[in-house]
Length: 225
Image (tube, rainbow, N blue to C red; front, side, top):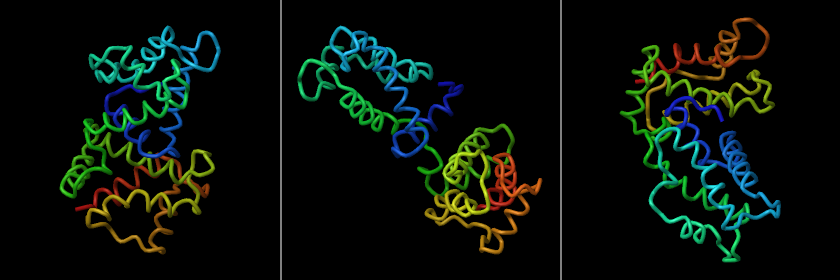
């Protein structure tokens, strides 16, 4: 998994543990599956005590890359094994492994920096202001926030958002500021239709992510107060 920065890691992990239909959850699921399969050297579908360290080390690689010691808390490996082996049969099944890690990560991500969805009103408004400075932490955070709404709307996974999918993308983006009582620009159905036409600069009937990001930052985010 090619996560380059701590900020990307934070966004990925928060999304991964928030919903089992999120793309990031699916990536985390596959990451944990690979750590399980790579450790299961005798191909019996379970991880025993001798194989256990390999599974933990594989899972620990991602958080360690970003200085998060999620698997290096001093707990003895034999005690950790017992806590994962829910049915006490002396081996860990994939469902036991998956359930344990998800519960563990749900607790650990609470200590990570807040994403826009978790901010209070002042924090979110401050983020929107900071995001107007190219290259700032706020701009990077808002970049990932726009990806989340874009992915949610791109139901057919063609890398574009059609006019039929456009309303969902707008609603997803403004859900947090609306919940916080943040002032938003007018977004009536007619205005949304005009917005889609304006974003679709090349007139191909669909919006690419860069078109969405540029237009939204200038015409939605910049007007939040």
